[in-house]
Amino acid sequence: MSEKLRFLCFNIHGARDLGGERDLKRLNDVMNHYQIDIGVFQEMETRASRKGTPDDVSILAGPERPYHLAGPSLKDETGWYGNLIVSRYPIIRGLVHNLETTIQYEPRCAVDALIDGPFGRLRLIGTHLSLARWQRFAEVRNLLKLMDKVEETEKNPLFLMGDLNEWRESSKLIKHLNQIMTPLKCRPSFPSIFPILRLDRAWHDTANLAVTAATLSKNGINRLSDHLPIMVEVKY
Image (tube, rainbow, N blue to C red; front, side, top):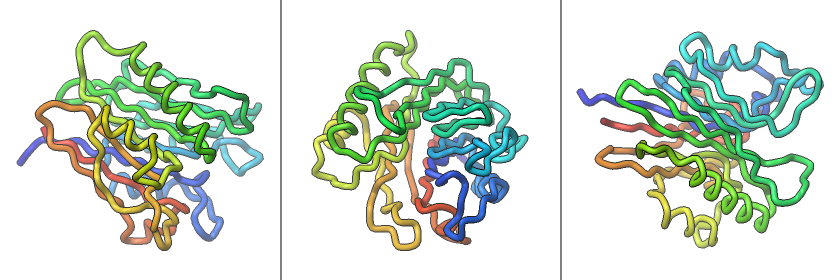
């Protein structure tokens, strides 16, 4: 049997399901069911005004994934909202990249983790881009520049994933990323109850690794958020 790692990329909508209920334990159960090693989340919410608590990250990650990298887009005195990586393996370098070119109500960022995995180091980047087309392209341009600035001296497998808010395969943004990295094919992820748009996407830049992706929807997963999650599997 081949050695493998699994990632889950999921816009969790503040951990609110389609009925408006908030239950992070169910999201942890999904990760455990699919044996997810690293979770990459968008719209993580811990602010009290949105029913969040300081314990939410630990509840979501569970004891199985004790290493965390938070990328707040919005903050107040009670908590934050934004991107999050939770990992079974140590995060030995964690960065939060500010992708803004103009001031926005919801600033956009990316979490960038160098992880000491069981089969070697890997670099994993998660992000959530803007709704406006021109802002998305500027954010990706900024992200690629920032990625290059912190390139490791030793080339490690690289994975980029998140909610890009871009469904058009013909868009310049998607074509540009596809030229730089290898896109992973998977089914549409939005809206979760009847998915027709590929808002959530993943790419990789790896050598001699088999990487696949699948959009998950069974066993009530399609009701946990307005998005479906993407599971990425890497075989070593």
